[in-house]
Image 1 (tube, rainbow over the protein chains, first blue to last red):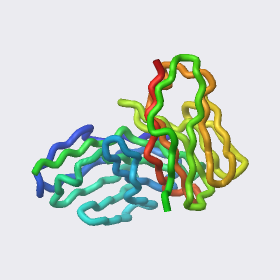
Image 2: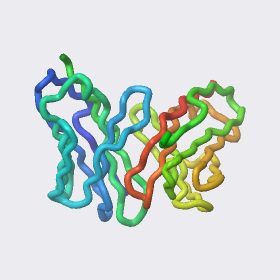
Image 3: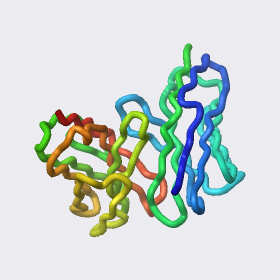
Image 4: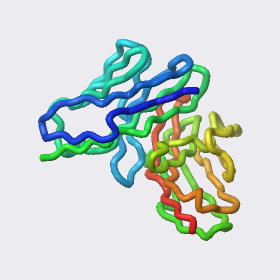
Amino acid sequence: EDQVTQSPEALRLQEGESSSLNCSYTVSGLRGLFWYRQDPGKGPEFLFTLYSAGEEKEKERLKATLTKKESFLHITAPKPEDSATYLCAVQASSGSRLTFGEGTQLTVNP
Amino acid sequence: NAGVTQTPKFQVLKTGQSMTLQCAQDMNHNSMYWYRQDPGMGLRLIYYSASEGTTDKGEVPNGYNVSRLNKREFSLRLESAAPSQTSVYFCASSRDRLEQYFGPGTRLTVT
């Protein structure tokens, strides 16, 4: 059974204070690992797809990396508008379903 | 280009009532999905449709039915609502079963 565990559950940062969110996973053959951002009362917004260990993707202040067992979402010099819940999901090579973690709730204080 | 749209945005039902949640996408995606999101449980797949004309059960299908009306539309029906179905429901779509794009959600309360 595919599993995704995200840590920490919640993270408070000061504006400009860089940090990382963790996504540990077990999957029977990884087809893709996905990061999403979810704002309160809205649907998840797609950020990145990573396909193989060693791959990295960047978008503005966010950088996602992937190893064989975990992924990190690095946030550099965050701003208050980066406050959201960040979700990680994996897709096994055998199917099309995504298995989601419960998310990390990030709060960036000005 | 609206992406994925869902109706209604909010709904309150009494136990035993039925309703249909509507979803449409304008991205010409082949695959569509229905999820529910509950505190402490994350997003869980209810049903999905890999392509027009096919549907399959996900992780939590009991109490739900789906219809893939055409390539654009995928509806979720609750035949006899129960309080345990109080949740936020999201529809999503994807091209080639890769990254999924989500709608804004329907907030359902069953009393």
